[in-house]
Image (cartoon, rainbow, N blue to C red; front, top):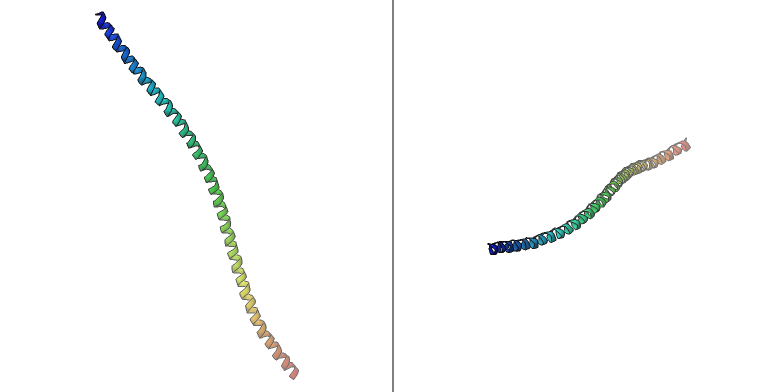
Length: 113
């Protein structure tokens, strides 16, 4: 009976040692995974920071783009107004020639009279 109990104790001790080794392996894996998780979280925080910077840059770019569009719209309006002014000036220049001819003819008639 003693030998049987010693045998049982020895088996239990071997089982305990096997479980202890398995526990150490699991704890080691846990530590490795914990370290990896910390690194991943740090990487994730860095990526979120980069995203915030990119979004800020994008918003600034969009605001500048809108300003440039407004500037272009204003320049187009000014260009259109200048074209209209040029057309009016050309019409007046043509009318000036006609008026000069009329003045010349009127002066001639006046001299004849």
